[in-house]
Length: 244
Image 1: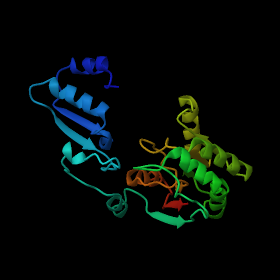
Image 2: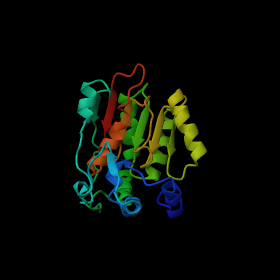
Image 3: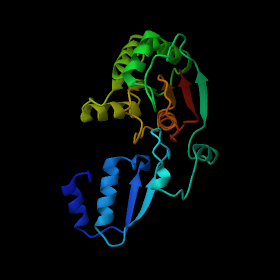
Image 4: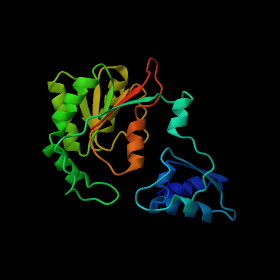
């Protein structure tokens, strides 16, 4: 909200901060972040200290985070698993036969629209449903797709096969999204299909199966998707990752 000049002005009326904490700091190279940080620096003779926090300290667009940050401490997912703060991963690889990415455009990552078309052409929906039926019965599943259409079609197919599934997108009303997440946490829903919604900031510890139903060139995105299933929950011993 502090991208809004009026809102930032209200914050700074309390005095210049001595410390600025930037969560999801891998976004800090964006122009909107740079504007906020520079305005804060300009509000005082001595710029405040900054602390940046992120689970994915890298970018795919070539912008160098080292221009803004100095690495003070690093704690990997592997460290967290070894020390019992995340559950271990068990992976199943089931590549989609016939998926042709040779004509899919994109630089740092694939074009979502073109990727979605290629996936549907390769019958990703039925492949996803087959994989879940084979490996994930009894689990709480989050599926990541390339497009909203793929998420919708996958949820429909799973419901027809006896799963309790739904989808969320950026256009899902907030109250409806909250109900979906609560139903998932309470056990009234088995599967949530989503396109770029349940990555950053999603807290669903009961999820013990992640399905990567979309290729990506982005290591941060892949880590974020996998990470949604690694949080601790009573009775949870592992996270099953089904990579298609």
